[in-house]
Length: 92
Image 1 (cartoon, rainbow, N blue to C red):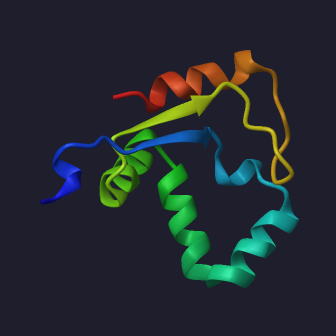
Image 2: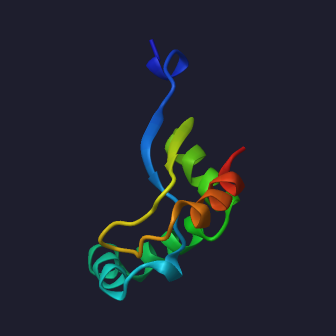
Image 3: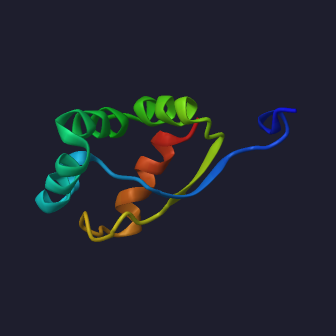
């Protein structure tokens, strides 16, 4: 039996970001862990709503819960009004 036929996969923690908003130390960390190819992949995924949706489909993710803030140690923390339009762009 394939459980994927009966279960939805939901990522309950998505920060809506763009690569150019990350701090340089975070980008360096990604490069050390995954190389330039990994950073290029991150840029592709985050470049557009379709990039994120394609990545989600490739990973078998049915839905995500997009957070209204994206602040964490790797990026700045804008106010929710700056993030909400991006969340709308990401919705199918």
